[in-house]
Image (cartoon, rainbow, N blue to C red; front, side, top):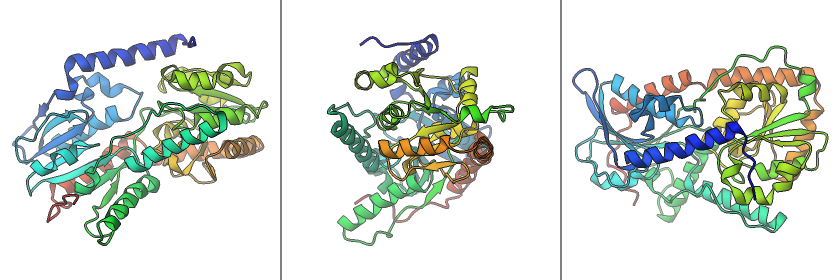
Length: 419
């Protein structure tokens, strides 16, 4: 099947492939970047997340994901607090800690691998940028099963995560999402504790929320025609199109010919999905498939101005940054609980279940709201996102957390072993 790539999407795909090739050439998954503070280090930290912005500061301006800027912010904060930092990519599978660290922070599976080599004085931090792997993997599988039952086609899983016990060897967990994301780690801990025949609260590590940032913010869309926007919606997401509910949205809009949908995401990377939904993506007059859109671009701002709401029934998130970006742009959100965004009736609609019927009903209900009510929801979503999810909020919360780490607040004794 020939994919339809416009100039903007083609440019994004070119940058994406170039970034992968450059990372491979730089051997990012084997690099160690050593950074020292201005004065004598008060502590040494091992940091495992995204290395790109430490090798090239321009990468921190990449708006395709929040983790580029957040990784740089976290490292710079540790340096400002007097830590010498050894930074590696979360994909590094070869590094073995060669010194005593006061703090080790990892985002996925390295913490479990390193745990036996860390000293008793090390505070171990798992930074949770997704829901727990056990929930995430089951959630995507369930969505793929449901799609197969509806359409008789089995699509490839795109968002499966490796199994890991890092959350069980951590002294403290920081997390980007809301209570949904937190609950997936608590549930896993309780399940493990029950199998180990000890109280589920025993040795459970504390969890600290650090609200996910957004890569771009926007002025209030003054002069927006909310009456006209009532019938136009946006789906904006990254890879894992079934995981993020695009299949449900497309099937719902196929039955809502009076409503218009813009689809913004990396459709060209998931050819099996594009084949399965070719009619809905490219053959319906009320669906316009755009492809990847830079949220910092005028094109995205124009889309947000003509849309009344975002529809994003994701199956599992660690912070729902794409939904929050759209709320920053003044779009109320139609979301699942698993999108991990604090939603109220003033800022959007929480889906009762993740089904085509539920999405269709919620979209139809949004179109019936008066323009004045939609404008009020838009203003509430915009104000709430600005107050709770920004780079400034993230930086302040992480700094407070890092100060506690260095002060030894989360040091545990005896250390958790995961046994």
